[in-house]
Length: 310
Image (cartoon, rainbow, N blue to C red; front, top):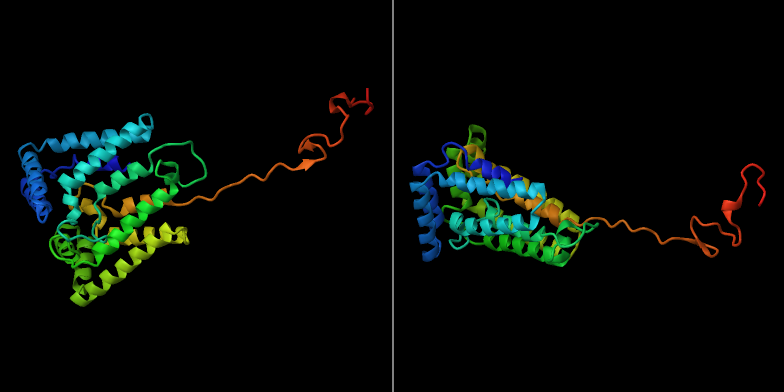
């Protein structure tokens, strides 16, 4: 369904606005390694010259979404999902500002496309369904899934503690959103920006970073994992509203729903299920439960009318 929504967003009027598109790709290329920056700008120029390519990308995303919902070519669709997601993460998101040092889990770390690729791996079908967590049935297994979760959240803690500067920083993101979002969201962004003094930003980064590290370790070490995953879901719902403004889809510039809903989905994929174990069959005499306990009696020989043995 995420791919399906993303595909529909590519057909939205105004998405291929030349000025907005050129600015977006220029900001994405900023701070990236030179070869990657050039490739991003080349993709931007191609889309500027042929805006109909947005529709082609939308068709591909719709096809992946439909294939996954139908469930007939799941592995092929998941492989296409991972490949396309990685291309978008590099050429469309510029590693979500990781190389430029301007990113935060509040505003969209590590990039929606990378989470698409990770989810494709975690839900890759390997065995028949059982009572284990969905990710535990993939070839990574339960331990591998928890390790992926830990790496993501430890990475979020690490980038959160770095100096937040540049176009991807929290204050810059809130400032831009306050001029692009609908009035209600724009007012909320302005209020948050007014509160975000330098001291407040330092304390907020430290608190969010420490919380991310704690959630990573709790799930990795299997210490109250449901509590940690539930807290991660609640935290990302807050980020989706305040830092990500629902992925920017209401401003007319968003091409996906943001990273917060994907983190929620990731938490549900990793969520451990309770095992329902059947008790061993009890024995009575030499027969199992349901069998007549007395040997030598054939219950099929009872006459219901006379209650006598034939």
